[in-house]
Image (cartoon, rainbow, N blue to C red; front, top):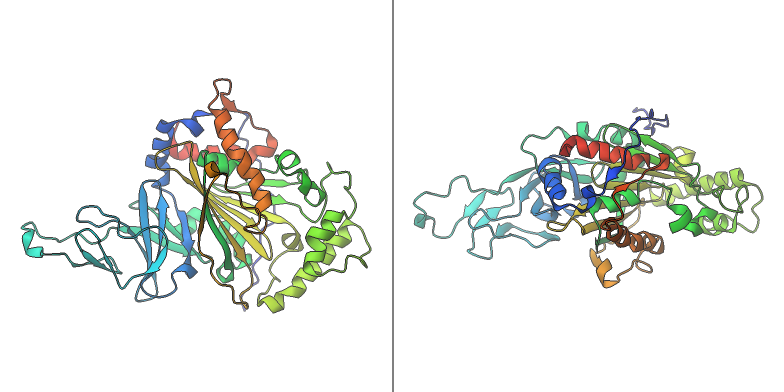
Length: 425
């Protein structure tokens, strides 16, 4: 019998990264964006989607990164393969962004056809090509999976995915993300650099101003930050009030409304302090697991209550909870360093329940689009989306030269340390 999985709780050592300012040019410069593409984006593993989005042979989904588009295709033998989404005749894109099914991929320009394994099946009038058409199969992209997620790497000879992920599987495998269901899927075009968005979710320092109403049930002051080789973690306590809140040390109404009552605790009959409130929340959630069809015995009590927040370099964010998890990816705009694409999928741990796969929605902050009322927690994310274009606009001011980071922003500093290892100074 296999040993139960456990997320390591030991603190990572202080990375001692100093206190140098971070130049704003990394966020605003087209030249720096070009170096990121050449030296970083084309060499790292990137989360492209969910395995469950291509369940049968011929099912596919696309992944867009910078100027490239990739087809992730379920093969006849059940494996997944990735190919550049471009006809090798004259460069036409084979499929528009999204999910679909294909018995073969036909180019709409001249009708060249490719099998789902990428092999060139039938060029039109092959006799008219005296040079022949050998070597014109769809070009392969390295593809691998972990925890129900599909990763691709544009490098010709990348390091194995498990080596690249480092500590992440040990930390997140106890959540068994392969059994979770997608409940919301959206891409938001935001008027900011992709790193501006990553930064916003790499610290709890902004809660006191941006999300002040959450301090009634979230503890920004006692948040823990851990930095690993490439990736980082933040353990963000919930079901307890921030010391900044006047209700600190009590079971606030926010704890009762946003946590206890939502999992079936009788808040009218509840007696006890904050520790008992967390215990009641844990017991209620664990009691829900059998009906959901999952086993939460491998999760620590803290993981039931708190947000275990991971950033997988360069652009993947997990807000991991026991019942739901938010997964963000932050993609660069192919032409403008002051714009980006924010992908948001919400996952529900309910393997025993039928959960229809929602269609992807598309929004733009430039159009005033918001998420409130469209998904659980949309009002919270709207507060971040409101700030991001304004941060980017301020960075372009002649008065602003660099980011001035404190200890609570160590994950941002570590991120830049890792980024510079790829891009170079």
